[in-house]
Image (cartoon, rainbow, N blue to C red; front, side, top):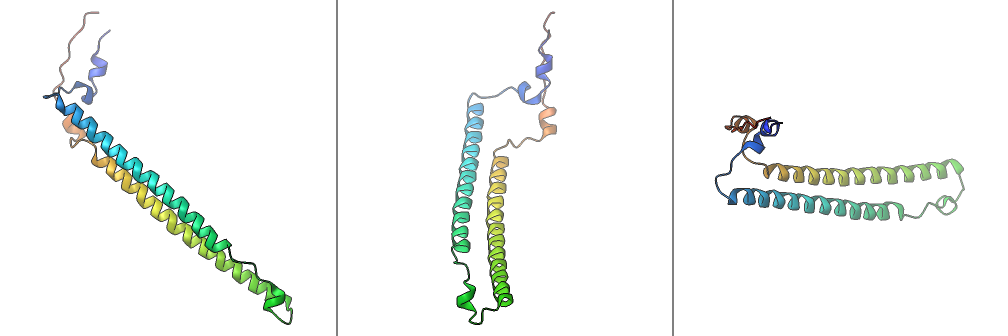
Length: 139
């Protein structure tokens, strides 16, 4: 059995020039992951708090009392008033949740871009073109 199967992967076949290079790359990768995770956690926490505040603002409104609003107790007008109030609360909630989701998506994509910045500068073609030293092992 030979080890040539594992040496076909370019990142396994690379030889490092200095001992500090892998440590620096690992530190850079960990720093990128740490920043991205902190950004994602902050985004989820901010979204959750914003959703709570939006729910409080939208649903804390007392329901309309048709007897107090309309002195002549017109059921049709009271129904319209109730439907318009419910529609306004619905639109406020949908627009608020859409804004919160857009902000969360922007945070998640920003974290993903930060992770991409932590990747090495080599292209796949450059890594594949790196010289590969293979030792044949007797079977």
